[in-house]
Length: 293
Image: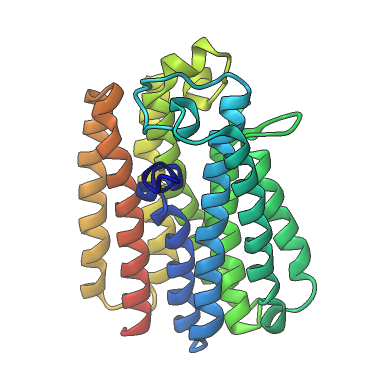
């Protein structure tokens, strides 16, 4: 078995999106003096595994539904190119989903049995993003789903598992929405690149529905809204010196927006990774600033 196609199917450049929410949550928990390394680490592993499940499912179901073609502008897909059999990808998807659920169940020890319902929702999202009677990514709902499941859910739930309290909401909620908006920007780059191919096969992403110009504007606005939300959550408690990190962020964000407007096709592949890494940078800044303020 070739390993490289499987590593490509994991889409390593996008994995910072799942890690970012959990890292930001570590900062939120530290803000309340409740950072707990073990449950936090389990949350991180769970989040990354869940994203890989979603990536595998996306590759398998898009192939099965005839939405992919060889030589696409996006990252190479092993099933479409013939490096991975559809059956192998299907089995890997649901096998890894089962393993992810097992990891998630261990968090019940800290958060309680009701977390089972959160886990079920995450598992359903991982598959429903690309499959089922109404795939979210095919009907303009992918961006909203990313804000919820890569921002609001991981940040709030990871913080709750560590603190055991909902008193963290005033800080954690705006941070979670900000992280989700940055995650949506990664998806915008992906769909901006693939608009022509998606339109040809009837895949209605937000870029197909609203057009590249509108979604490029959304990319820019998402970054500024994320900045405003983080400032709202932190400006009263963090020294001014720490705000340099957000100044760096918004300048880089603007530069990436100019690359989005001027790029097309495979030229946008590096931008996707840069957008994900900028999201990771902000989460790491939140962790550092809230831990050492």
